[in-house]
Amino acid sequence: MRIASISLVVIGLCVAPGCGQAPEPETQEIVEINAEVAIPTAELEGSAWQAVSILGQPSAEGVVSTIAFNAEGQVAGNAGCNNYFGAWGVDGTAITFGHMGATQKMCAKQEFMEQEGRFLEALGKAESFAVEDGMLLIYSTGYDQPTKLAPAPSKSVVSGSVFYRERIALPPDAVTTVRLVDVSRQDVAAVVLAEQEIVAEGRNVPFDFALEYDPASIDDRMSYAVQARIESGGELMFTTTEHIPVITRDAPTEGVKVLVHRVQ
Image: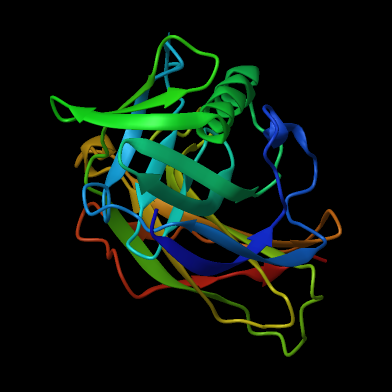
């Protein structure tokens, strides 16, 4: 087996099923791990997939679990609620995933948590894979049925930066949350299409963001916007107060300036 040495910075280690139940949105510790994994195969390098079924159970409606492989032996995606990353490698048809890290935010619904737990377990116990009829099949120890994944749909991006005018520094634990939302219906809560969290870690605004979304989810007749908020220690510090349109009706998708105002 060919071996490569890979250095990972793992944030919020989380490998157990249902790890999305942890209440903290960001980690308190950063651990550097040096690991040896098999060199990735060209068959999967640069590919991205979306789960159709996990360990024989169909993906829940509205819950998306994804995985993307890069050529440097790193893997990343969204397990259903939390983002995760780690190392991957193959030896023939054998496949392994190691040193998985994940964010630790609370999932909105039980079905998100349950699917996330199954998906992470499928990766943690992965033993072999195959690509058949355009589908990626990952077989896991102890399960008769594989996890089936279809090629992930191509993504579009809304990008820009978040800033405020006050001349104050953010606490190191401050978290900026940026969301792409459907604001077409005024009588219901905005539907979140994409979200990104940015931990300050000693940095200050402006914070650049890139929100990936499925273009198939966009209706040209509807209205979409970017919203942002900055929190520290569970307290809201800054938030958007104006409507910031994007995507439709000649609104921009890049260079979007998101001004947040201080909460008194």
